[in-house]
Length: 385
Image 1 (cartoon, rainbow, N blue to C red):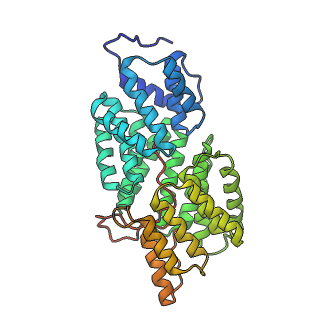
Image 2 (tube, helix red, strand yellow):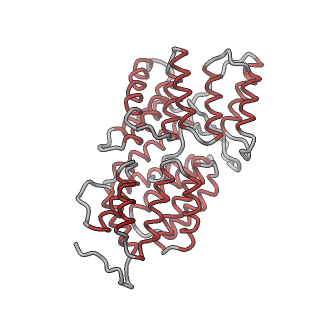
Image 3 (tube, rainbow, N blue to C red):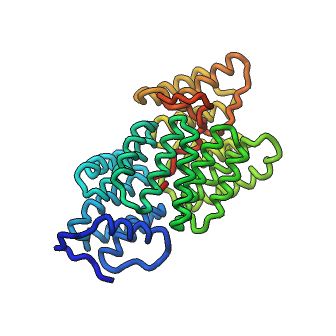
């Protein structure tokens, strides 16, 4: 394969990105030299491969790409950090790349910034970043992934109809590209939306369809199986045996995801705790969730579910723990609102029955739609949707 010259003034970075992204969708052999390592890093980041991506990035230190691709290499490193729980480190690099890199790399940097904003419960900022990404992006798999991100931003702002439309467009385009991972991610987002709207059976069906896609990474399967278990737990009747089986399958997948903490592993542990009837085993799972969560708002969810699943938990202790964890979190968050609701229901003797499973979500500020708040069962999948 002919490789671009290091001295070529006409190096087409957008073309390189398109080639690398299309290659990441399959299992074909990669090019040799630096180009192969850049492709491997792209595939590893895309497929959540904890071994392939860092190995390729390390080799690129010894065999660097041409200078025109140095911003692309920096973006791959930032995306790896973002996917594996180092958002603060990734954020500085993404902000710089979004303003200084070539147009194709800027588009992808804005995409990742949009994902980061959505992760941090700032969907309006995420939408702005994703719109800029879409404006800059050429026709490529990235455009489909950006559309999926815009669907997430719409969903967290209460724009259910718009979210459904964007998910449909993204899924259709991914189908044309043969992007089975992308299709599974989008179906997972559809399941997330259906759970929040109380449509547990529709969520289960979306998860089952997603899990039928071949070659899914372990973390993607973990997220989908978490959503599936929550859909079964939220079903009205007759899903008890299916939920027990789903909990066992989720435990088996979690064991394949390694020991590195990850928020998706935390949400999986919360779902398994909800399905667990034995108190000691349930507490073990809640402790696992705490280990895998780093954000205070996520850790506060563990306190909420510990109290929710153990009615004897003292309300004063729950309120104090929640306030302490969220002291530096701006604005109301899911755990805070759920905790206040639980305490109010206990005070009035009502039964707490939120329909969306751990954790149900608040509506983000500024949402104007008069629909039920979306129940969030896990962070939006990043950054490939």
